[in-house]
Length: 375
Image (cartoon, rainbow, N blue to C red; front, side, top):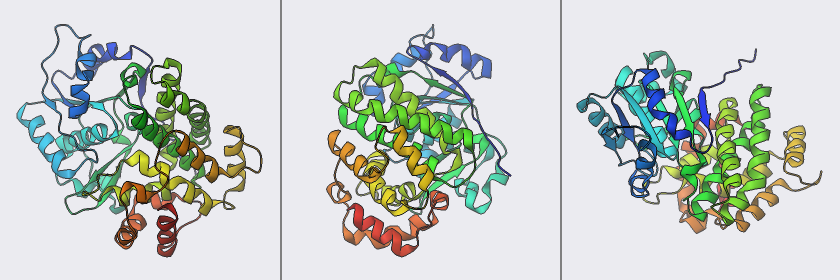
C-alpha cells in the first residue's frame, strides 16, 4: 500500500530570508548554531541572512563544512554546538552544509555514534529526536532543505545516506536572491543535480503519483531555465525557477533515487579527488538513462514530453548535449577518475541506499560497464 509523505513548511521567494528571526522565535530557538562553509561567509551571505534581524545576533558559526561532508567535521561542529549551548541549527549553504547541519541536529538529541542510524540496518528505530533545523539554501541543486535525509562520508570511508521523516528541517527558507552570485560552472553543476533528482525520482518504481508529478514539474522548470541561469546569472526569473526545481527535486525523491546517485556517492567518497556531487550526477546520468531504456517505457515517453523532445528522441543524447552546452565535463576521466578506480567503487554503489530504487537493478558487472561508459 503506498504511503505518501510530504514534507515541511517552505517560505519561497526573493526576500524570504526576512522571516528567519520571527520563525526561529516560533520554534523556540534562541541560540542556533549556524552551519555553513567559508565560501558562503566570504561571499557575505551570512550577513545577508542575518541583517534583517535587529539587533543583529552574534550566534556561533561553524564554517568548516567540506565539499563532501564528513563524520569528522560533523563531530567538530557538534562539539561547538554543545560548548556554545545551542538549541537549534540554521544551515546556510549548499547541500553539504545542510547535510552536515542535519547530522549535528540528530546527534545533539539522539546521541552518538552516527553509524547506528543507518536506515539499511534499521537505524531509524533508534532516533529519539532531532534539534530544530532551519535550512537556507544558497545553491539551486540538492533540495536538502526539504528532504528526508542527509549524506555523510563516514570515518571508515563509506558514504552513507541517512533517511527518516524526523530529519526533515522544521522550516525551509528558499530565497533565490542568495543564488544570484553563483558562478556559471556551479550554477550548471547544481542545476544538473536538481534535474537528476527529478528524473531519477520519476523512474523509481515505487508508487507515489504526487511526488512523481512534482518530479515532472521540477524537470520542466530546470530543462527550460538552466541554460538561461548559466548564461546570465542575473536572470531573476531563471534563478527563481531553478531554485524551485531544486526544491521540487527533493520533494520528488521521497520516492527514492537510483544508479546515478549510487555511482556518484561511490565516486564522491574518494577524498583525494574531491569530486563535486552535482557534476558527477550530470556526467553519469546519460549512461544510466541508456541502461534503463526499455524498462520504464511510459515514463520515458512522459519525460520526453515534459522536456519538449520528439517522441523517439534519445534522452541520454539530449542530456549529453545539455552538459556540453552549459560547460560540464564530457566524462568522468575529465574529472580525474581512472579505470583503476572502478573496482573499488562497485561495492559502495551496490550497498548505497539509492541502488535499491532502480527500474532495472544493476549487478556488479553492470556497474562496471556503467562506470566505463561514463569515463
